Image 1 (cartoon, rainbow, N blue to C red):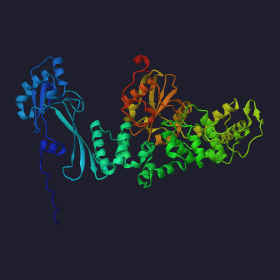
Image 2: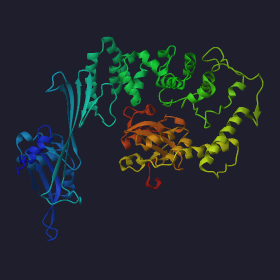
Image 3: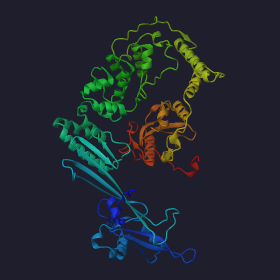
Image 4: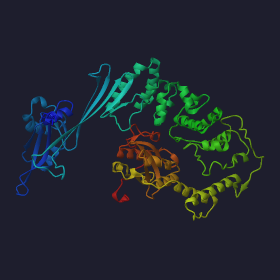
Length: 622
């Protein structure tokens, strides 16, 4: 039998050699002040001592027992960390007496005092790649130095001979290779040329500035002088790095700047379609909103673009009708028109022209569009066509003189003066509520045959049955993120000047989302699937009466929505200060226009309009 080949033995390496393979840069001398014990506790001769630990550049560690000092004086010496030039005069004198005689003179300036909490050193630079010609690179090397003399299991002070120094390095690189800007993190290479930065990577100010420098180098390579002038003028008003990268990738969008803002909040499918698109800017705008006269003059803000997409998605094809409705949307607003708005159900039931007049009527009654407009599909099936109440009143044209000049020619109009009413209510509306209530009752009795409807007026019975029907349609399931300890920091208790004590809690059940949606008058219940799949974390803030006051949608460590009642964004200084304090405590980033009034970074707390009392322990509900 032939013998199996023997594997070669791995050569033995010292601790310094193994550490040199894992870490970049020259090794430093680390020194650490701590407590230790000598003797044995069982023999009764143990005593606490004050120790100086030194880890030399070669990896050797030495422990020096110090003359005893008063405890308070020694504690003041242990906490400061940093290079010798950054320490106080007392620490410099201690270094000159005990550490400097034991290390070479060339290591004095680089010697670093460490403690339990990590001391961070960051090295950055913009350079040509040392090995690949033609590649520009920005690198950031972050090193965390720490030390401990406590036992790993018990946490007690170890004997004087034990100490552990820890050095952890994080590397981040940005490389400009041809037309691509690459973000290199441990184990991942991402192409960020199109402007979509990964949410799990948080760039430091130095790294963001390095990415901005590389982006401008790419812009000078790809863009013409005229495009560069447009880009400089636009980025002077919008300092976001993602917007700069997106403008370099799609320079034609600078003529319609709203498309650059739209590209930052697209879904993954829309993002892929945008990257594959080869046409001009007007062709891409037409694919989003359909035919629209003077589209570049009308589409001046994200809300108008989103509402125009909703009209095109719903099947409204008339350019004049769409232009008339878009004039009711604020020109430069953002974030007040909900994403994915759809009126197709209304167009299918009453036709394009009648649906357009209903939408115009709803828009003209609102001084400010919150979720424009607050229409929702009925609960009865599509085969049941509700009567149209718009034909029972004389037609007064489009928006009372605004929009189209001529009145809308309806196919069916009631004779002047003929108004059918029952008990002060329109007859058609009463019939619609009766049919809707009957359908709701039939649907509920499919699962609960013995169900008896409640008593009250027709509107009260209809609303009660609608609430029960929504809960029967959706199973009450537990949301996993509510019990995940990794997201426990999202649960906070803050004192808000507007609502008093607010308890921010993660939503635990899907029926809680329905209740919150009914009380806050928004569509947060439609995010149940995203919450169950772990795509989104929903947080609801309740006051002392357990009433919901606002809800927050979080995706990948970013606040995507921050809504008050009726989908309103925080506007007052008190509400903004509450939002800023919550962001500061949780460490979340902002990716929503709801918090556009926050200062840059979203973490500075605005001063409230009146004095705020502190939160005392007896004020908390637990």
